[in-house]
Length: 367
Image (cartoon, rainbow, N blue to C red; front, side, top):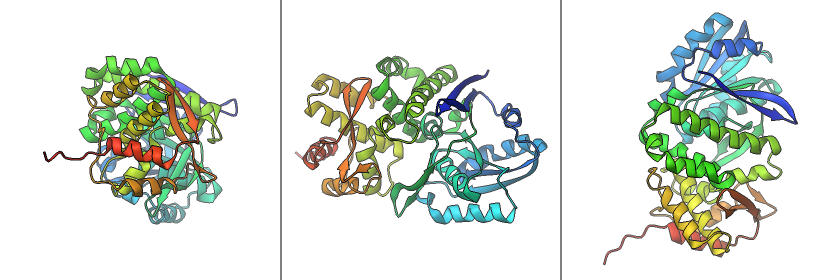
């Protein structure tokens, strides 16, 4: 089984997204890109290392001149410059040059860090994405955004650096725990909400199969989601316009993520941010009350939260001011004009955000 999407950059083919049910075709895909008898650096994390790194290493060793492995401690808290420095040192000590290759094997954190390393090492070397989580497969591996957090502020340091290839083994989704799997689903729902109402409906119609991880349904879901993101990033590769629509749910989501000290997953925070953004969209008469409640309630059967405990609403609003999406002190908020169509709005006030946060704030009823 092989399915391929090609992502264009500046109206020219840039890289392929390959959907497979194994890693067996990965060496051939690298050879076809011209990476033969080159050094390969597998960058992964401590969780994925145990699952897939040995298999990847054994597959690519015959076509390489050397393979090294850099293992990052798993978790968002390790997405920082000190871990990047360790990778730089390994590349230097092993004499990696501009013709060699970095392989990002893992989820969104690994992909962002490996891509950022590739963007900066020797002023830029090639890298490929081998995403193993739903979030990475449907969102973060596509579009060339790379970066690290700085003192808890999300992705404040980064670069645009396009991969040479995105190779997906859809079967890796079977190895995720339920929370991590569902976390990635928030980005899939987002793609339907902002760009494709039919896809959003398809997700609801296939709810059972998605939750049960039916591999054929997962393959279709991932490829449809990737195609939506592909269309957006082709139109606006460096986020000067419409690509910002992909940040639906992220403005307040990122602020909640930091306010909760990363106790919640990224996807859980995106779901909360999406509910808040839909609420603001309703209050601005962009969508109806019925549409708001439908959007809110559809996160529930997929196992995503629609309320959050123990947040300081004023602190969350303050954190949005430090978000990298701010523009001349204005928050570029993404709202829904209708189901399947998002717009950029710079008129969202602190009072709007406060009302939305109070809407999702869980308060235990002691009556």
